[in-house]
Image (cartoon, rainbow, N blue to C red; front, side):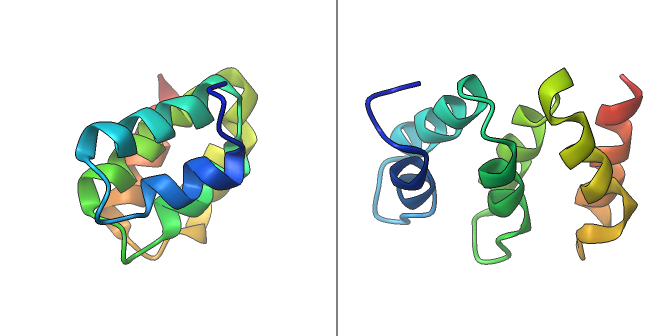
Length: 92
């Protein structure tokens, strides 16, 4: 993981005044550290820009995060499109 803590990465990813690149890097750092719960929280953050929610969802497509991805696909997400994408990612 980067030198940032998971909490710092979440704060950066949700900081609308941060650069898009820094926000993407924060999500990537969470993926590298297998921070499934934090990534799921980002996916479920409705105030977060859609592209970052999708990036966080894609980052969950790892064997370590399968159960979290399954939870999202089975109804934890209010956004139908993201829920369907979570299901598709599980099938891969």
